[in-house]
Length: 213
Ligand code: SF4
View 1 (cartoon, rainbow, N blue to C red):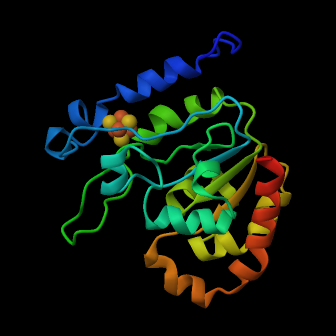
View 2 (tube, rainbow, N blue to C red):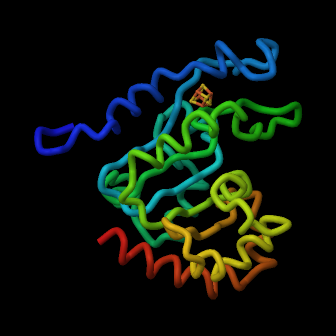
């Protein structure tokens, strides 16, 4: 925090999040289900950003670097947003807060586990409360959509994203735009749903340009 910035609780919350060890020390399903590694919460909180990227959970590479979306998914997301890395990582432009702030580990098939269930109820409302300037939430993937959209969410991710105009045109504040996760696993989904690139991405880029200038 600089001298000119108000003591609005954001820095205190940053420190609280960095120190969180709930999934190591007090997992809700008992110690047998504790996080199998040292927690490393990864989030970008911001006083000025008008766009919040609400993702899923860090993967191993992000866990190691501490930089959100520092991977191929991030490259694709930046391409969707039409921004370069310096712009993406400018905390005056983008806040980045996944549903689970720590890498959740792998399942038996070697896939990333879902975000830890402990995390969102503890942190999400508090994070939003210290960033009242946010004007647009990008709900990236089903977990973020489930948390941020409530009854606006449709029966599955495809239908939720397909109804993106309804989300944007609702009177919800901040505005919300659902996106699929930019993982390579969704490459086939992108091919099956050309409307995403043809219709949604131009509107996404228009809004990002307006909100990050
Ligand atoms: S995932 Fe969330 S609740 Fe669990 S240790 Fe990390 S910050 Fe804490």
